[in-house]
Structure formats: structure tokens, C-alpha cells
Image 1 (cartoon, one colour):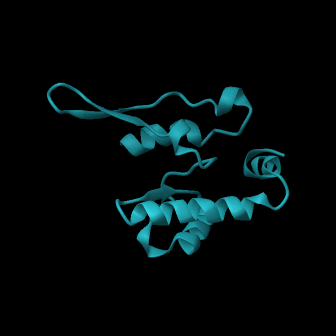
Image 2: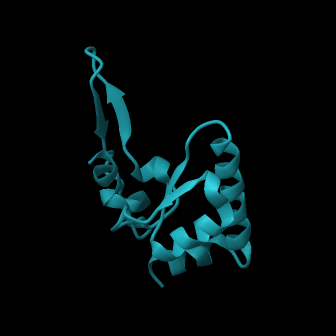
Length: 112
């Protein structure tokens, strides 16, 4: 198996629903204090919308392979003049152990 199917298998039987519920709870909690934007493929975005409700913005215009934005997303930085830019860290699926075709473009897509 490849991609999400393989990744879900790696989580263990029955664990995906619990993980999705935990992520949704975390997003809703953070959204009480600051804006939250989540990204997913069309099916996962629809599921995230149903779990998160209206307090969290869920987009499907930036497709992803996995839920770790920390690994695939950009790092934002400012220069001494206050200018802002974004840097991608060249995510490679933990040494090509995981599907990451979409994740390799996440930082670039967010930055643009």
C-alpha cells in the first residue's frame, strides 16, 4: 500500500478516528484564541469541516499527504527592515519512508 492507506495502516487498527477527533478538538480549542486554517485533500477536508465546525477554516486548495504541517509547511522569518518571507525545509517524507509528493510543495504553495 502507498500513501494515506499505508499511513493509516501504520497507525494501528481503529486509531485513525481517535486521532482525527483529537486533532479536531485541538483545532477548535486553539480557534477560541486565534484563527486556525487546516488544509486537506477534498475528502479529508470535508471530514475535517464536519469534525471542526465553523470555528476552523478548512481549505482543500493546498493538497497534502499527511497532517504534519510542521514538517512540510514553511518557516516564516523577518529581516531587519521588517520584511516577511517564507522558507521551505525540503521535506522528504522522513527519508522517503512515507508518501510525500504533495507535501514537498506545501511550503511553496502556502508562501505564494
